[in-house]
Image (tube, rainbow, N blue to C red; front, side, top):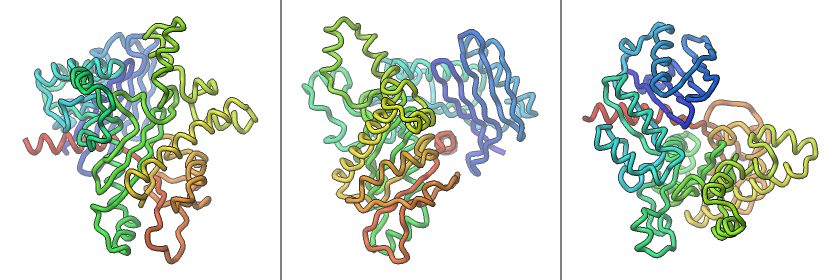
Length: 409
């Protein structure tokens, strides 16, 4: 068996999965948390059993050592796991990386140079790569969140700044969650309902107009035509766009200067917009399940947070309908998108003018499968758009991209 180990290194956590990229089977999955903090922990699932332990994790080197020991305990030492590649999630590839890339010393240096574009993410991603290369003598592949959006049309990727300043500082729309948007949009295009829809309308896949909503604690939207992204909501950083768990999303840039003139430092404002805003800033909670409970209890702040969240989503769907010249499929994915039927219905019910509908029974049914949740009359009028829920699988996407690159090399 040939496997790929996928690593997602965060500022204080290491998520990992051992997968068979051919079948998609997850063999071992886990997370090491609170790295470099007091009271580290690890959770791992293997062989149908879940293991949880509290233990010190002073640094990433120890996190990888713990991973290795737990693999051995699960009966699959790293040296006997058939690992042909390690796939690493890297948030920002800048203008340098537009595809999965085999890691060498030059690539490590280039990722380090991109840290100013993603100071909250790339340092941890880079640390994970450096330590993992010491532990595992196999090809390492960096898969970039920004890669899928590298070829955005210039009209979508360009900010209306002085062009010399923008070029000097690498300022453009890069987009994020690209691995998820690519995986989900490909799954949508291959879904039998979508294939049948295009065939009934006498159209090819190159005409398929998709809006994908990746809704988790971080959230982003994309407009995709025939498999090619035409626009996306996140920009130079993951801060722009939709309202998120702790991020503000779109905001007047003048707010930053207003707050700084009021005595806040640049770092204070950065923390405010990235970690203390969004749903959390409006309601006091960042988890949509908690928000839903507060709304049900009549909490006015929670109700406003929900309304602002949904308003921004509907605004982007409408805007992307204009970018694409219509919508064939609106898709929800990621933690909130896949599991919160109230968010899905809240978005769609105000978009009937686009032909979008939702079937309450299909929407509220629990399922882990890709599915259509819009009303499906026996004879659909030509051009009727579909609403879908498609589970994302970024780890599998990374594993398959890593395996393909190594096989081709």
